Length: 215
Image (tube, one colour):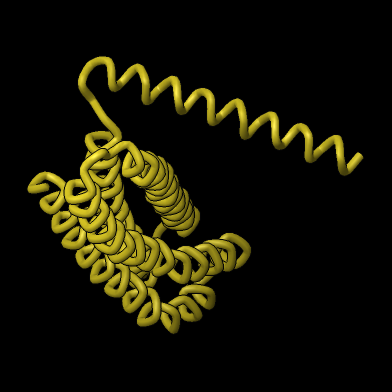
């Protein structure tokens, strides 16, 4: 059974690889190469990160609103907070998905670049290209680290928000609001940290895109 599952996994990977190769081939026919795709996907991450920032800020505002609750229908406040949590989680998932896509095309680009070094007949040009590849890889490593760090910072916020949403769901009363007040400072700190890391990641993205366009 284990062997069967491994075989299915290998077939799946091969299928995905074939689809990816077909995609690259189709894009190259219209003059769109892996470098261009990489730039687009880095920009996609930037957009997803900016969207996530807005979602997290909105969720924080709703949490603050719940903490300041002084009457009315608490169930409605809970529902709004839960909606904000779900939206924040979807935004974080979108960031992760787009970072994964950046990794995929970057690895394919670097593999292709490395293989094509052997096609040079000029040792001088091969050396220059190899140097440029090494520099691009180093810049990319810095970018990926910043992207993953911003992604990592989202998890404490999402976990804390989920805990508080669940707590409120089962304790729709004034005493529950009092308990949530003690969580507010930490939630605010998490959002501030996320915003800083996303801003840093976006700056690294701009540097990387500019370096690719200049080369």
